[in-house]
Length: 327
Ligand SMILES: Nc1ncnc2c1ncn2[C@@H]1O[C@H](COP(=O)(O)OC(=O)CCCC[C@@H]2CCSS2)[C@@H](O)[C@H]1O
Image 1 (cartoon, rainbow, N blue to C red):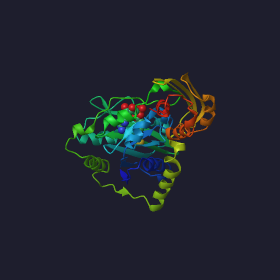
Image 2: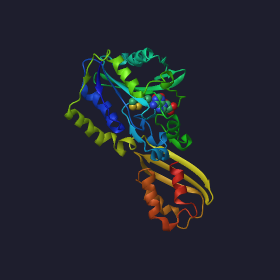
Image 3: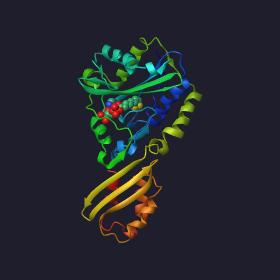
Image 4: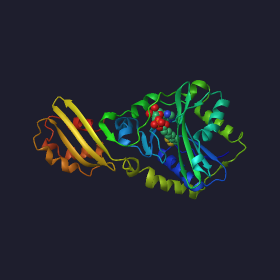
């Protein structure tokens, strides 16, 4: 199989690349790419980003957050994770069985002594633990199938950044299916991830006989444009979240605070503060200022600071209010 070389580590570029390969490459035979992201969470097309991603951990660890064009749940990538993409011409998408498309990966892993198995879901497992999540999209005669391979991922960060209190969100968005995850490196303790990538490339490209496809400067420029105009925008990554309701409740030293909000396109459509606290000015005056504002800590923080002298929340501090909006 021929392959596309992509050494870029930026998630918005790489996710743009997958979309571009699906819509523009139009290969006559299947093609693959192996690529990596630096720390990133990639959410599914129909997910609520706020419901899937812990914003505090995103900030702390400088994690990129990108919505992809395939369905399914949210996954964490770092440089211990390797992604694969197949672009496959398909005449009859209704006959598509994902297992068939993932088979070359499974065979290559088996040859490396890694006994992965295909599950009933879209996962590959090793000793019963998930090491690969997969998703696909069909468009105009081509199928893009992509998946992860957890070679040696920082699982602690993965668990933290994908951990959000579910009970605060009410939406019809697609939820992630949390699993116990494993690591491929256990079975290949002497391999670095670069060697693992090379071994897979050799295997899939018939021992290096199939040559790489070099994208031209103008093709790369098209991908850059897609990155800039879509995959690195707040409007796509957060704003495309299906509408949701948010409820949170907390007892602080200075009183009890309740928040209820309705969010559409990532913007606050309705917000209500209640509870039990002794505000100086009437909270009703603050609420309209938050309508139409992104449901984002930085923007809300700025509005609260501008209103600092009004003491709307009495002795509940702005930081406490914000902690209820984003953990
Ligand atoms: N990197 C990675 N690989 C495999 N599984 C993961 C990973 N990160 C997290 N998880 C686990 O999967 C669930 C979510 O599973 P869920 O089944 O909900 O979602 C997926 O698997 C989607 C896979 C998308 C693959 C694309 C390929 C290139 S860009 S992203 C999460 O809660 C964790 O338990």
